[in-house]
Every structure is written in structure tokens, then in C-alpha cells.
Length: 197
Image (cartoon, rainbow, N blue to C red; front, side, top):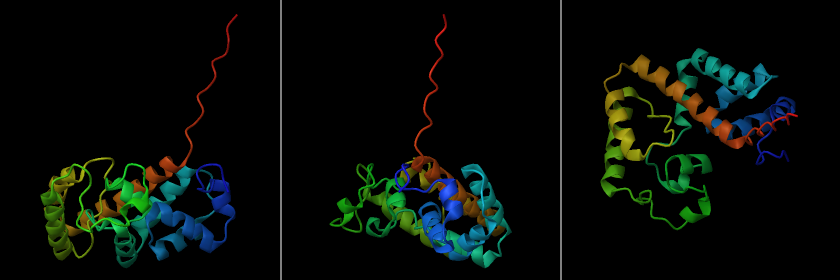
């Protein structure tokens, strides 16, 4: 097992079977089997940056049905915490440590700590409106923002045209994956200053 918290190095990803490669990248992208198969065919990658850059190009070049599949792999903002992946669970603010066992006994309506109950209700309503309007799920790179801060973003998104919103959602799936990949990599060691004298 690689030293970086179990996530394969780029070299390991390049040498994996197609199924193992797709399974590993599911941690970054949540799913999207046809998208992941396309990335399998683009190997080898020289770096994490090349992997993410290629993922962005592939995601935007895919037919719309495959883009919708990639978007749909992500959970709704405010989804039942018991069905979230460990990464989504953390990103949506349910547990700072990503401990999924802590949610096993939670009520599905439970809000993240310190958040008013009406936030979840408003997000659920906006999710329904958004999906009815555009025909696909709202996905956004949360980037550490509280769920309350997502509400105005969803309201703005509802004023976009469908093509612009589809492009934004595809971009955000890649931003999320990139952020997750950075979080799975160990920090670069600090350079040791050379002694003068």
C-alpha cells in the first residue's frame, strides 16, 4: 500500500488494471463509469496535474449524456449523511475528521453541527427547483464554505442558461477531484536550508 494514506501514486495508477484504476479514481470523482473508462484509455500520466488536466478536457469533450452521468455521481448538497462517501461527508461539514461511523446512528434530517434546521430545508427546496429547471443535479466545489453560503450560489445558478450551467457543473466536478487529490497527497517536505560558513 502506498505511503500516502492508501491513495496510489501516479506511477501506481498508470500500472493498475483498468478496474482498479477506475475504482481508485472513484474516490476523486464519486463515479461516472464511462468518464472513468475514458481516463483509463488516456494513460499513462506523467503527473497529478496531467491527470487532472486530462480529466477536465475529457469531461468537457464527452457527449452530454456522459457529462450528466458524471454530475449525477455526486450527492446533492444537504443529502442524507449516511449515504455520502467519506470525502463528501467531510466536504458537506458533517464531520471534521471524516469518521463515517459517527453517522450510523444519525437521523437523516440532522444538520451539521451549529447549523440551523431551515438551511437543510432551503437546500432541499433549491435542489428540487434546480433539477426541475435544468434536468441535472446541482454540483458545486464547496471549498470549505458552510452550506448556508451555498444558497446564494444556487440562486445565482438558477439564472444561468442550461449550457453555461452544465459547463460550470462539469468544471466543479473536476475542481472537487483536484482538491481531494491534493488532500490525499502528503505535504511536500520543507527544504532544509544550507548552512553558510
